[in-house]
Image 1 (tube, rainbow, N blue to C red):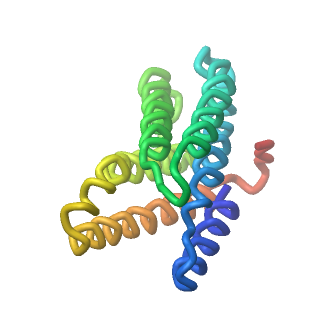
Image 2: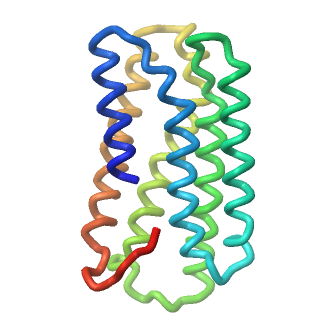
Length: 179
């Protein structure tokens, strides 16, 4: 997932500097990112009822993003799919936190990769869901403020990668994640 995320970010930045629209990446990036994150949470919730609904929600979400991108005007960037992804990811994160608060099995959460992944996703999607839903409106108000908002987004993006790094560093060497 991190490799995919990094690849899309790199391609997007190269296209931006070449003055080529990178908007076509979003309808690919959003459903793949969601599907990969949903798969991680599905393995976390395999013994819970929510684990059985995650594949259905993933298929419905991917279908929605494809339909949204097909109905959008050429080179138009809809913020609603990314907002919807944020809400769905936040729901998964909240379910993870709820599971851990109820079970009290994990006494040292700071050593659990899922805790750091969930915390990073919580911070990132909490802030960026608001940014994504209001970005088109902000762009109409002030280009300078719009650029400042996207600078803030970049900071949250870097923070997310720091949490991804913590997550990967804490995965036990003997553990074989089959994701």
